Length: 353
Image 1 (spheres, rainbow, N blue to C red):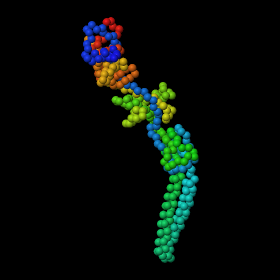
Image 2 (image 1 turned 30 degrees about the vertical axis):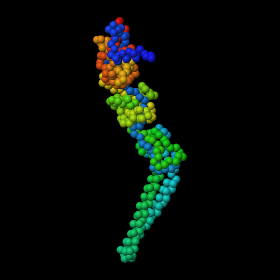
Image 3 (image 1 turned 45 degrees about the vertical axis):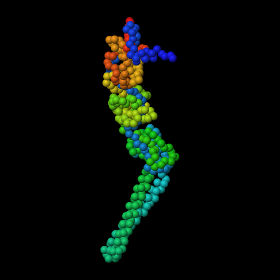
Image 4 (image 1 turned 45 degrees about the horizontal axis):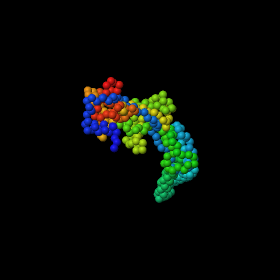
């Protein structure tokens, strides 16, 4: 049965094999571990959104006859946005107006009748029963007048509900209706962005959210004009992780938006933070044990190597950052580790034997 030289070397090391005193030191590349303050940087692309939005809808249903604004239009408070077919409501208003006219005439007649009955009663030309009947007729006429006024108010409101108006100064960021469309009561017709500022929304990888998240000094720029930068600060970070993407939604409030910034526009955001001093080593130092990652450390006096378990804080391009396992100033083998075993004598590559 065949086995590789590396397996034999590893087995001898595990059995406590000590190389001969006269063994030729193995030439390896060695790096000296240094602890440095690390600057953590993250750059992502997000999207400009409104700080506050609202869904505009008709309170009644019907057929849309007009859509008065286009997507992206800026509208003033109370400006008409769309209209429904209002024939039925107009007819109802006319009927209510006619009813109110009749009720007012009846009320005036009842008032005059009561005044006449009181005059006749005071002169003894009529009975109190006739006067009381006139009074009751007036109360009935007053009730009819109030009902007619209420009917007119109701039908007038129903007519006004056929016109969708902007409740505040805003921008149309979504239009979900077209002329001729049948729409239900409270069905969203448009989405409006209130003129209360901008924010940028980013999908941040979960691993980047570990530790203290930078809350200020976030630099933003439009993809179309990367040279024009503006500032932001973290407004809200979602407590939930998107199971499909493994990201967390982070909202950045824009402090000084540039002129012409539009909703839906892509932006690039960059954030930095300083981390506590950490040992940074080339990725090539990593070996493995049954318990996890490890590095080969060189005893500076004997130049013999031993395998040290390490705890990796994070990986970056071309290097690893350790949180435990290697002290500052330690000599670590970066290349040539495949020929090592515990107790193996080494020398720096390039040095004479």
